[in-house]
Length: 124
Image (tube, helix red, strand yellow):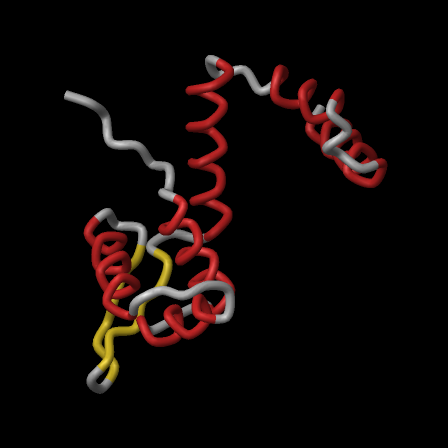
């Protein structure tokens, strides 16, 4: 049996980013935010958020007649899991090739590199 991935689909990531930004959100909140970028059906957003709740990415509570959704875990924790999963799957658990790739492809700014060096010094 295949292990369920902890990585968001493209639509799930789009939704969770909105919920992270808002803190809590109704389906309507997410729907209206998505409409500013692209056309999408309200029922699609509702279905996706129900799926994300079932996957335990979101929690919900009833507020009046609407459900209010919130991230199931803090943003930092969810990102940590996604990055760890990516490094494990793509780089066999070693972050070094990822960092080398980012540096060689100039994906890290001078400021990023200085911050990274500072974090490394502080962790030693």
